[in-house]
Image (cartoon, rainbow, N blue to C red; front, side, top):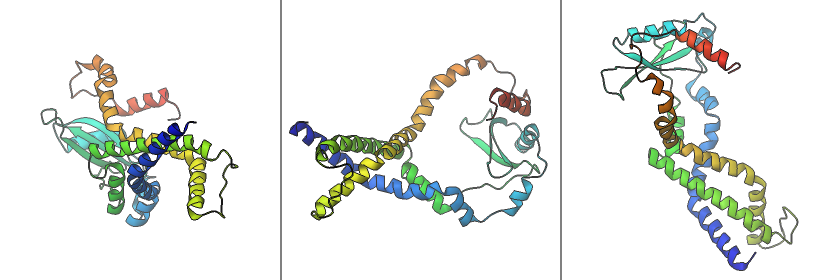
Length: 259
């Protein structure tokens, strides 16, 4: 490799690393506790024994849950339904067809009693860490900025691998020259840790960049693929006519066994 090429790659490696380091450090520090979000919330918020008992009780079917939710907000129609993983709660989202299009009603319904279930949120500390990790409290702009930092991380990794070969050509793989000057030792540690973890860090960086693009990707999907999928329903049936949710779920399970 020519000296000029090495200098160019060195410039890319140095500045892509320096610019992104502080933000990548923040992502690492906040990402570590987020790996254990469920366990930390369990410790910080306590454990609801009643939820464990209720999980084994007989459950209302989805049609009954939906009827309960809509009876509390007459005139609204169902929009979404989701399910809590760790408690028997169905979350029903409904909307007034004559109201603002972006105004929704969210109701968590206890599937064992039909009563309103308490909203479950993470501990404030964990919620703060999650928001900081996701977009630094800047919304989409923050997400895209962190995505740009992720691209710089990828550039730093690629340039580091390119530079590793000529610098380590005369040394065995993973050599740490412990008897050399401190600067040389730190360079060897840097090279060793970098080349050993490069595959894992590259996966984290690339997938992180993709995650920051989730909002524009989903928006594009809605404007293209989803629009085509819903074209056949441009003239839907009356909003008061609904098929059975339970039947629809069973058909979905048959189409995707094991899911």
